[in-house]
Length: 280
Ligand SMILES: [Mg+2]
Image (cartoon, rainbow, N blue to C red; front, side, top):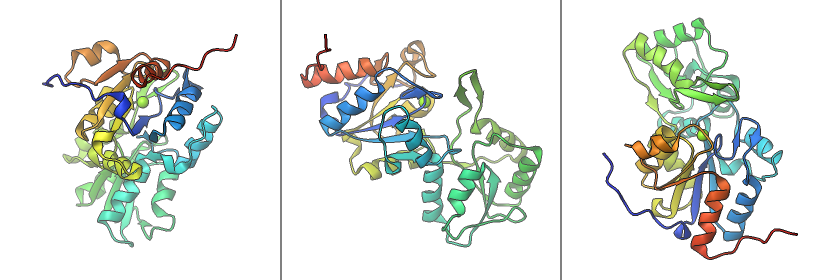
């Protein structure tokens, strides 16, 4: 159950944590109003951080992707669940710790390059679970044996599905479910909606929870993650979740808006700033 609460006014926001897929773009297609929205944030001095549970691409990859859509977002403004996993490992495990798991090469490189961690498929101390679009039975078999032998188990994220142009396909959570069934254990999960990712995002922004809103398209990750971290929440309808699902609850965003142009109009209405007049 959620109790109705008065949404924090958008005009008081100093920072915005944004999901990317389904909010800024869909697959490789930028969504309407993308460039104008970032221009507005820059003009208003609203700090932003871009979040994704997808750890199969590094932050620099998202910088390149957004640049092709006309948005300049440096890698420091992008937090992937893979980066969150590396920070978590550094806080909890000393260099020399043996890692293994079900994940793709970019994440594996991120966790190993210059960190002092080593990859050891025979006797890992920590098993990493992530999205892996080249998963094999052999990878699952090894991870299962390691977890059963007592290794710690960390999941970058637990998204059940991944949106693609063709529809929803199995996400990291679907692979984790296979291991949960086989091991009777559950991993420590880091990505949205869990708090480690949200806390790292706030720390990067250098702002408090009461100054920041979470903007996303998905109730069970973005909006729940924002609520868990005490942020105001804004949902746009350009991605996975629908208005009906949001209104049905129990996960209830503070604001539901059709898309970025609608959100921009709402911001401007609250701030009393007129839209730039269209040229004739
Ligand atoms: Mg999304």
